[in-house]
Amino acid sequence: MKASDACPCASGRTYAQCCRLLHAAAEPAATAEALMRSRYSAYVLKLSDYLLASWHASTRPDSLDLAEDDGTKWLGLEIKRCQQQDESHATVEFVARYRLAGRGHRLHEKSRFVREDARWFYVDGDMNPGSTTEEKSNP
Image (cartoon, rainbow, N blue to C red; front, side, top):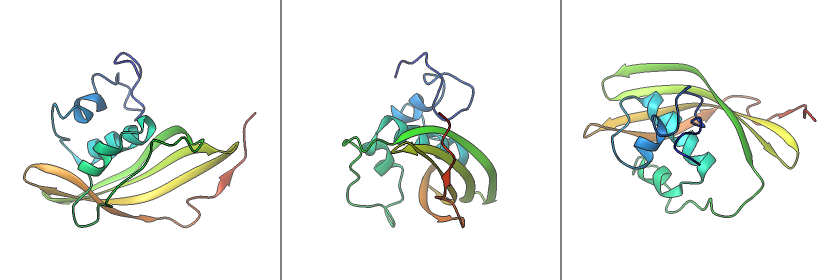
């Protein structure tokens, strides 16, 4: 991805002005929403090291293999709601759309984030009912 390309997280900014700063560790995510957006972009760009580094140690998997192309094509991210419970806890509800094997899917999740040592981390999330239902494919 070129720095001048639109950021995959749908912020309206270029990748260089948005998630690249977080992916390159030039600055930490200022909010849980910013971390959520950067993690979506990391999935699009298959940046497994960034995803693991931004995952809280209490729930982080040992490894994450995104190198193999499974045919997933990420189509977009929509942030539904962000809630800050206190200065160290927040939730972000989002819908990520993707295509796999020619079929459209939606991943609808309410993610939990925690802030430790001035850094936000993804903890876990709850899938909403019907979150992985297929959508009608658009030719």
